[in-house]
Image 1 (tube, rainbow, N blue to C red):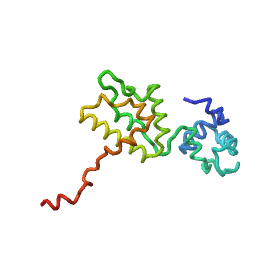
Image 2: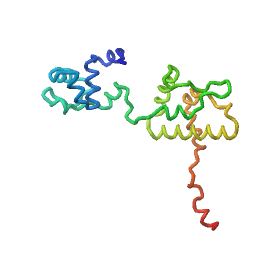
Image 3: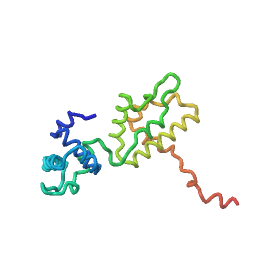
Image 4: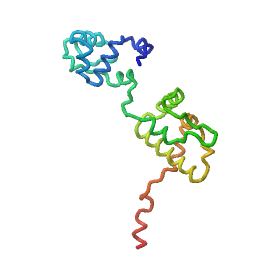
Length: 185
């Protein structure tokens, strides 16, 4: 779905948005289907003095157009490091007893709100892996101890970045005292 408020804020037309999308993914076939060559060049040229097109002159070959990947990705809501919120979301139980800890589906309004919060807190693959691993370890620790009823709601976990304090529960098998087994033989 096209967000017209975003187009207005960035002062671009729907055609410019579509062309930036096609340039970002280098989808030359779809570009040919949607726009005539002259239209594509004209729309591209109208973007030259914006933050989306870099180092381009009006006579530059269309396929040689250099875009600002960072700015276009932000416009298209594309995360360059491909953090998958579902990895984190699915590690957390949905319901314990009568308590709902998270929405049933991440595609609900509440799920999307949690995803937005999570993606503002976690900005790299390394942080994402830590959050997923620490949450998995903590939930497993609580499950083994029979303490799942004391888990906080997922929103509280995200708001307070609780996984940072849970990383102590991550165990790395085979690294602790790895030489001890040799002495016992």
